[in-house]
Image (cartoon, rainbow, N blue to C red; front, side, top):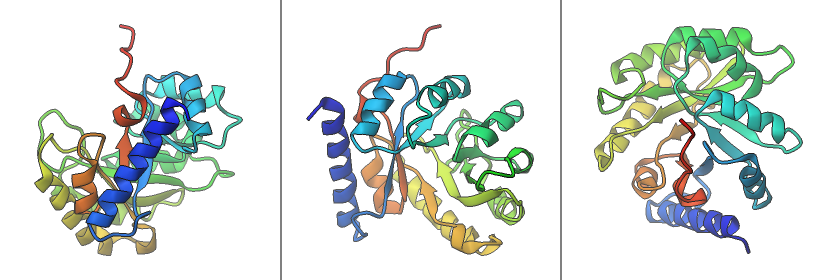
Length: 229
């Protein structure tokens, strides 16, 4: 067994254990491998280990990997901040976009999604604990965004994504309360199934609070190689 296979197995055990401790089904949480700055060869190796969902933060780097690994059946997630001038590339190349925090972004993604493509899965990014340095809409804006975005034709609004400050488990609990509360605003409530929160250092706390998807990089791949400046 190689190192990546071993790391993935360890993370899956950690997720399963956290689910069981929280009284949830053992398979209630999806693992999203955060692969930013990792070369395509490492992603291919992780794919061979069984991983299918990969999350990227940097668009140009991600597009190069998507091209290099096009023969593999990878589910590509974009988890960085979404700028208006990047929506076309995101709409054309990804299965999921996690960083939507404005209606105009969702509208552009919907308009630019190809007619021959399935609906683009999106999550609303919420600045759940009011950090000055974090992207995301404010919690009080979410209900209206859900009502508006869930009616767009070529996107499928799946839930919320949060990145709380470290050591702030209350933020996970607040995100779950918000996630449950705004479902009633959704035009298609059966689609509302994803609470993306928790990373390598806090996935156990996030799962205890109700996360359905954890975004894990370091625990899978080790410390990230530094990007060239």
